[in-house]
Image 1: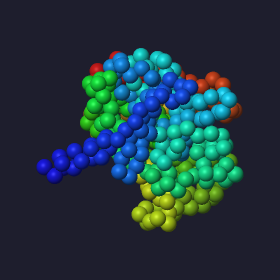
Image 2: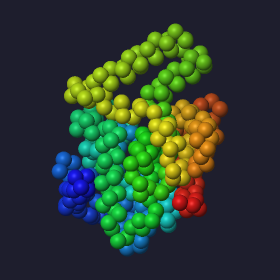
Image 3: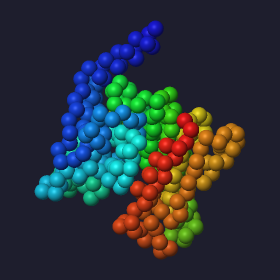
Image 4: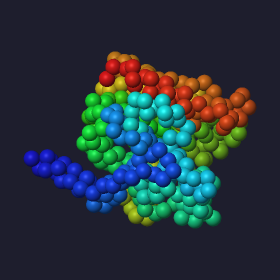
Length: 340
């Protein structure tokens, strides 16, 4: 009884206050849910919300990238879905993206660093908001997403028979945890995913650099020891206000292999062959085979990087010929044709 009352209370806190409007100059609808201790902004890539369709929630990667850039005379530019064929995706789903925590929905160039992250001072590349740093951990992203999904499940223009979650890079960790905790999720797509967590990629990169003779094995050992010591210190400081990054590093560095293979829903995993973050995806089928499970599809895209840009034999990246749209459309086709 206590649990039931608590859930009802959470529902009332989250949804007694919300707003909806169109983002000026775009085809996006902006929603805002006001919780007791947080405000959650999210958008749907449509202004016509009269057609009943399922939800596809896309969980974007790391760092405080806003949902829109304010380019002044050039207008408002949507960001997280800019590499996708949104018109194709919208044929089947209402496409939803949640703003990064403590990050304005629309940000001008005066608050974007060279990587287009929201910062307090563009003269300082990493001047992230302290509120964002404190909120940048896995459980918080999952909590915010589940509030949004619960709200959407109550809307008459949402088909509740299907709920698809997709995530890229850090967002894939969020997507997996949502699927683990939310029984309404019917399918999941993970892109640029490392089920061993964030720290793994740094150690893996050191080995590759040593093998390529870019650094010596002694240098690799020294740097690796520093990385491991830093990681150990994050665990010691996880609950301390003195180390705001600790909670994020700990939460996104834990292995999710067991969580992945124990999902009962269909799982789609796509990654580029030149993506060091996703190297371990080569081995994921072994874990499914051990569990005698077949509810997965793993696709390695040759000669593509972490963001699905082509990479030539010399390691040069072709940023003018991105393949995200094709990759995502293959996933959409899979969701539509895969038995739930």
